[in-house]
Image (cartoon, rainbow, N blue to C red; front, side, top):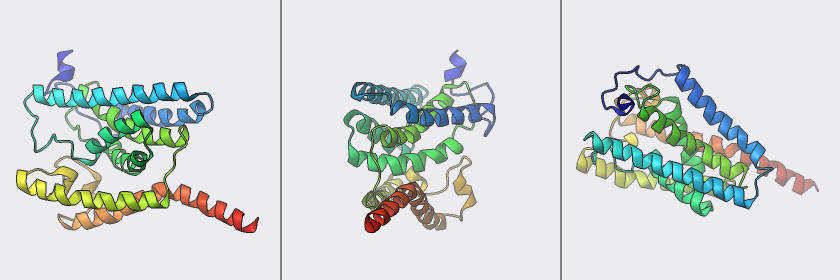
Length: 245
């Protein structure tokens, strides 16, 4: 059992798109699809209980990651501060679930799905295959970051707007500014804007630093637009129907 929490795991490394990876991705998809069923049968009490339960799972999962890193002496301000996008969204998602806050939902919808989806497809757990703690820890966190904004949309009835799209894109860029200078000050690489990560990611397909940051701007804009696009089509159809009525 201790090997599953070990720093130097003796089991198999993470197999990208291997059986364990595909099962984990499938479970996230099934969870998201289940919301189409539960939206018709859950009342306010059940929805609130679900939100609180998931918030608690996210909280304990995040604390467990920090506790594991601290236990093995690898916790540092250069790598473990909650400044990476997904780390920020974990805490915002917890707050969103506890308060049903729409402003936080806007951020979680665009950045939670857009950011955590890449982490699900190319997780940074090279040495830790299933059933190691870090494999479960990573997929629980990022799977819920994708699933919970979908839950809030499908079950709770929230939806992003054009203004949401604009606000999130602008504030994300503003957030990068202090993080950039913090990276310079402490030698960190939060948001991966000081260099590409050492583990394989989709960033490897982009130009060298710093040119890939400009490419990330375009890719980020495109991802946010894709996430907003279904609602844009819905709004345009509604506007057309209203105009012809």
